[in-house]
Length: 410
Image (tube, rainbow, N blue to C red; front, top):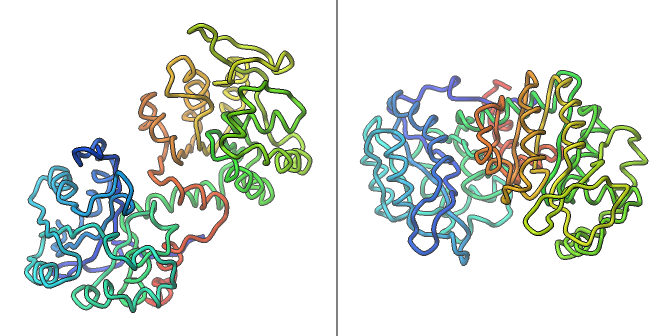
């Protein structure tokens, strides 16, 4: 069980609070315009609470990685999006820890919000170091003395041992923001003591991660059954000796996944009856959706979705579940012809008393299907969500636990 402090455990009126959210959003590389501000609106919940309680709020965030199309040093447009979400002015300075940034922080009045420039413009930000090592960096040494509290709100950056994620917690009291708190509570519910039966649905293309998740949740008795689709399902079919056909094999080879078949065989052997694989699949013929039982494979077209019999069987299993965790679509959801399997299975998942969804493409497919609000909880994190499901220790979560111990409240 994760033991951490939250905003309920601290007084913030009149205090300067550094908040680390995740403002890394889809942008148009040619214009820098924000295409989807969901993350900013989510984090606005934490920031609004701090504002209403009279804190002076300093935002440290990032956008993209230096050298990549979505990187932008200025977060002025993010500040404008936050301003819209809060319904009150948000200040921006194009500085990180220099004189302009420090003067702007010192000038803040209770209830005011300041966004600094992209924290990844600091060369040391992304270096893997311990919290104590990062605490000695220029970024932390210059900004921490101006603050009273550090709030880590970006669960989606918690798997990174970056300066802005772990460094401040080494020298300041640190608590979880509301987004981080919600994410951790949901994951605790899914991983610590899930109501049984607990079913995991794993699809998408990150099959190497799924190997570790499946092993972890079945070995620990967290999940009672795992339902597979997408490229994960394709690999399990191959592990069972099913020939998919050359086009599907080429997809697996191109993505560097073909070598995982042996690992899938080991999982099937180690956990008999616990891993469900597709019984039929769908592919495209002249603009039409065609389905075929796996016994009739291979086909000379790429497999694009689970078939309707599989979707029905998976749905039946899920309708008997008390807890469901979903990560990854079960087909090529971007094509309307092949969103059906994912739609039917995810709809069934929402009927469980507790349903949690997260990971890379999952949020996008939920929005496409209008199912985002029907899950009990949706994680906006990609990598952090997956690593947590794998049982890995996340640096950002660890610093919150250490901060709680230091405060004597763990």
